[in-house]
Length: 58
Image (tube, rainbow, N blue to C red; front, side, top):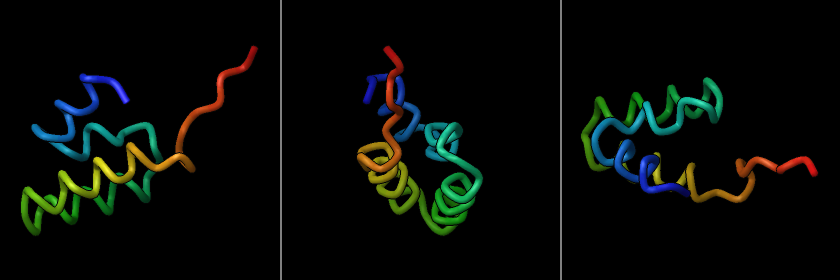
């Protein structure tokens, strides 16, 4: 996880998970509307989830 992603998670959480899929964006957006802290926590959890890590092709 890059420093830019962490900063985006803190400033505007839905923008940090933009490439993780529509479901993730909606969840983080709704949680951000409910409160800033839940949105940040959800974004950081999604970014740290190994299921969403991209596999590099050799």
